[in-house]
Length: 230
Image (tube, rainbow, N blue to C red; front, side, top):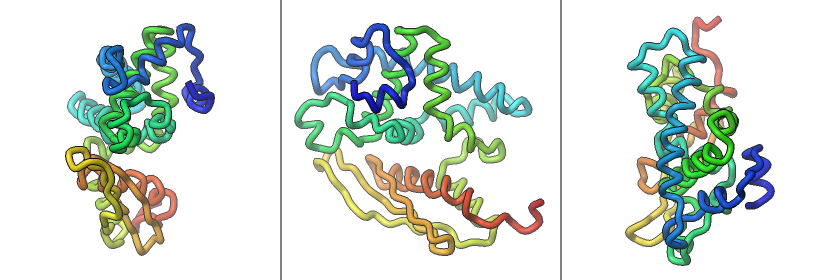
């Protein structure tokens, strides 16, 4: 396991084989991470549910469910995985590696869930909770209860419109990988604020959402407040 990834997770495995297993894609060998992914998915949902319950006491059950779904979907998981630079640690078969698997959203998301599952089995719920909350720190800090359940493009567009700014422009700037497993790179541009953000995904729509998420994070800090804001 690369030292940088170990430091970003801020967790020391008592059984390092758990982590190696979590980082092994099925294209690499028969002993892969899909069972750990199953465990990690359940733990992630539980931790995020508890965190939202504590952070937003006024949200209804339906709103909590929609917000949780937006936090545990493939796009958000892949973005968190990229922030950890997880792709470089994943063990892939040669063909999967050549076709861009280290940055494919589905592989990043599944592997991150497997890592969460590995931490849970190695150190218990408290350890898994601490790792997940730390990994999701920036995402949870930016959560807006008024925007729960909305995808990144919608959130960004509504936020800009509230400030009477033009909606973002999206452009495909590159594609890679085999025809059956292409990876799209899209730029989200907000000329009025001088913001350009790049996102990747297995479809143009997914790449646009990823770019919008990154652009949104920059926009919240740089845009003027809407008229009437205190």
